[in-house]
Length: 458
Image 1 (spheres, rainbow, N blue to C red):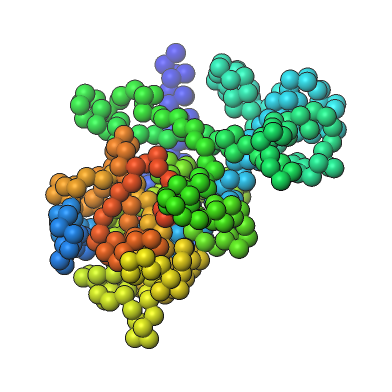
Image 2: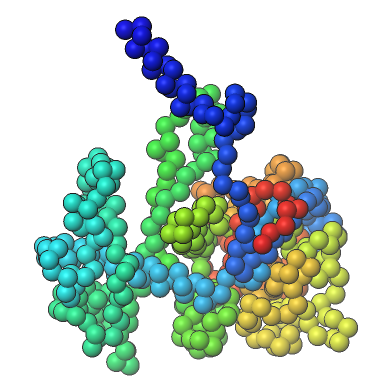
């Protein structure tokens, strides 16, 4: 027995240490990490700045006391998220919902593996369990098959293209599924089929790290039960196009209601009619969408896209100019040729003096020194920070952020096409309720920079 133990210990020692270490502390070698600038983003190198109103508080709100804070480096979208970019999200969700309904229909009809025609082509991936690995079989038996949803965990087969033209529908079962995604004929008008946007639902989970940390601190136990802090979300993601009418009483804005999100003429304009929750869902999807590609290429996963904190947004808006009133630095709204520098409402009732009545394309006017467009005007932007008029007094000076998921008031920044100049100031604060969508609120995303800020990125 002693001899057997000695042999096991010897073998374990030989194979665990190996020859490369030679008994030295060499660490665990991983693949070399090369930070890559996300498409459409720019690197904002971290630093310290005076956050808040260092100039006169004209509105006497006393909600932005000046203080020095520091933020780490991060990537930020050069423009607000556009209609075209958000439409990519909407279509992905629509395709996912459609594929899931088709796959479920195939399962309900009990079409066998030998049937690969018509709707059968859209069966769940690996429907034949004989092709599953031992790990997949274990997970299916111990987790997925125990779910209330019998289809939980079953992968969709994205190798097949969804047929959108009625003449290309392969069979009656396929027609039945597609028809379920549209409104009934009595809700159509002008003879045009209308999709039921209430079925465009995005589902995701997220981990409440802040809540878990508070629970760990309260109980003085780092091994807490994680389950209460894993949150599940379901949200309708189609923009509320009626905001163009609801936001303005006795005003004719039906063309914007009918065309702004769907017509190609507005594809490069900032998306509006998006609630805070929908903006957060978009960030989650963008992370998932990118990492699906990373996995397919065997590349390291990227860290999450998210909404910027209020401190990050103001730091980026200042463009490296410490005491600037506006993103371009100066206290004036006109350049040396008497042209307005942003899209806002210059005078009472006058929306057109800045050459724009509503929004403008996201890449309009000159960018600030961080190459960020429309950090003042065009549309106000959601942040992930909650609003409290006195939060500047007690937030941390390192990467400050007052953020409570249950707090309905969320900070919006930058002012919009319908705002007066005061709200365009980099230090001005405003808020909107998280479940509210407006014709003048959009968003842009950020991503944390991993590594030292002075490393050259490719």
